[in-house]
Structures are given as structure tokens and as C-alpha cells.
Image 1 (cartoon, rainbow, N blue to C red):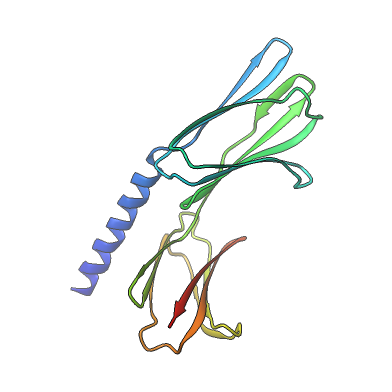
Image 2 (cartoon, rainbow, N blue to C red):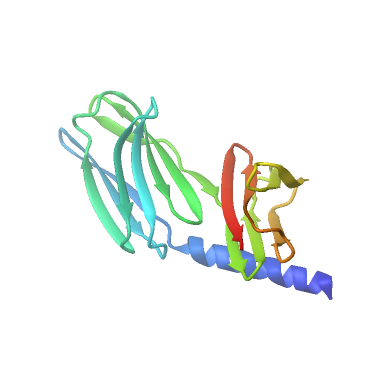
Amino acid sequence: MKTNLKFTAMIAFMFATVVGLAKEPKLSLLTEGQSKSLIVELDSENSKTLLKIIDENQNIIFSEKISASTYTKKFDLNELENGSYYIRLDDSLRTLIYPISVENKEVKILKRIENTKPVFRKKGSMLFLNLLNLDGTDVKIKVLDGNNRTLFSEVIENESIVTKAFNFETAHEDRYTVVVKDGENTYYENIVVN
């Protein structure tokens, strides 16, 4: 019965993730004669997306919070110096990074990098964690109390779907932080017990 329930939960998580990722941002490049333009089109179910353009020194050139489900913006790149830049789109489920190269009058999108984020769901005194870990990297999970003491620690190896449930029903009044480290990315979720 437990195996059946766990299998059903994993299938539901995968389905929800696939549906959530079905409408993804589109990035198209337009060059007309001597002008360099980049058009970002966003068509997403997520209503909160953060768009950034970052240079190779990690300086933010442009930043905008997008709350509409459809978004289109044209960027004039004529004033950019030659070099490497990044278009970064962050929403609640993932981070998309598009490295671009600007050389003379030519702009190229080099590749697409996608990092899925863990999904946290609170229900009463329970906190549920789901993470799609397709590259199979080790996932480190910790629970810290308000004084930064580690109450729980686990490393999950070679799992493509990481699911975990935390029960705070008998926990003392405090602010707890669940830390999930997936490769180079670290995510935090806070829960307050009153």
C-alpha cells in the first residue's frame, strides 16, 4: 500500500511539473541591418517571473518583475560592448539562463540552461518537499532552528525525484528553515511554529 501511494505521489508530481513547464518562455533574436535587437517573449502560467540581463562581471544591466501571463519586450543591444551577457528568467518552478555573445554587430544565443527549483507545500503542521533532479546530483537537506542549529540532515544520492515530508506538529515554538542544496544551487523555505 505504501509503495502504491508513493508511486502515485511521484506520478502526480511529475505530471504537475510537466504541466507547469509546458508553457515556457520563448527567446528570439532579431537583427535588422546595422541594429541588434533581442526580443523576449514570455507566455507562462506563472504570474511572477523575474527577468534580468547580466554582464560577464555579474552586474545587472536590466531587471524587471513580470506579473502578466504574456509579456513581450524588445531590447536594443547596439550600445552594449563586445562580450558575454546572460538573460535570466526566474519563476517559482525554475531558473532559465540564456548565455549570449555580443561581438561587433552580431548577437548569438549560445545555449539554454535550466535549473528546476524544489516545490514546497505547507498543509497544517506539515511541509512537503518535491524536487525534480534529472541530472541525479546529490541533494542535501537540512532543517535548522531559529538559532541555526541543525535538527535534521540527510543526503539523497542518485534519485531523480526527491520527495520528503516534515512534520512540525510536536515542534517547539520557533522559526525553522529547510535548506535544500542541489549541486551548486541552494534553496530555503521557512516555517513558523506558534
